Image 1 (cartoon, rainbow, N blue to C red):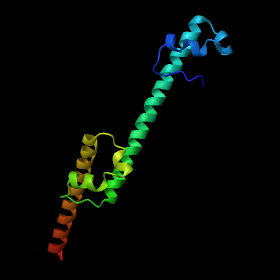
Image 2 (image 1 turned 135 degrees about the horizontal axis):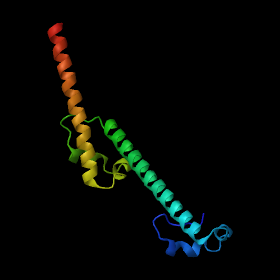
Image 3 (image 1 turned 180 degrees about the horizontal axis):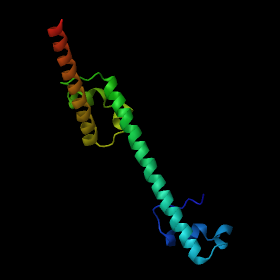
Image 4 (image 1 turned 60 degrees about the vertical axis):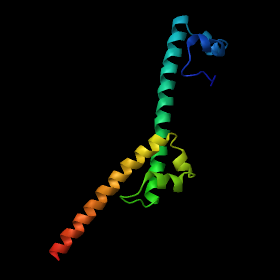
Length: 127
């Protein structure tokens, strides 16, 4: 409410809270304890929000790859060229991260293709 930064220090933020009536109700020791507790909780909350946002972006990127109908021989270069302007592509900030996620997804695609091929082969021999 006073826009106290979760990653700041007591000294830097004191001027924002010194005139708050609640501040005056606490002893000096309690003030510092309340501040430290707030900063710790707020920092954890911000980290959690950042993790959730990153997970959401990765999920959106995965949906993009699913929509792209990739196959085992697909290349990241072709994928990047075709979908590079898509927000779901751009929301993964680092190209290296995009490519890593692409390669992980492609491993799954290749595994699925191999399983399907083996299943078809088994069905041919049975039929």
